[in-house]
Length: 82
Figure 1 (spheres, helix red, strand yellow):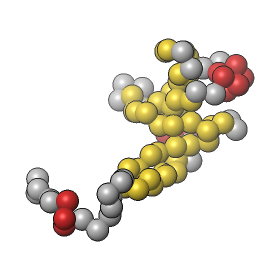
Figure 2 (cartoon, helix red, strand yellow):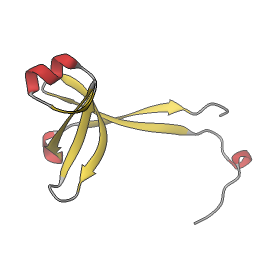
Figure 3 (cartoon, helix red, strand yellow):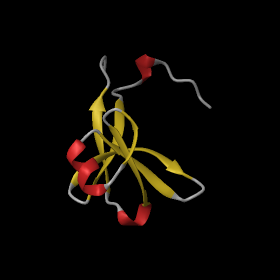
């Protein structure tokens, strides 16, 4: 691995993967190797009701979906200081 100083960078981004699933916006929070599915999360209670999502904590609803069923897009958010 090569070390890079901050001064050597022109810009930096946080990349946030997301997808739309059955009409709702979901963040991608992981991948389950055992089931080979993408783990999606939303805080939308309407999605929870309509899609019968799992609840892990208040206002965090998840579902696991095979990758081939999703159209993934990435949002680039600039990191302050660049």
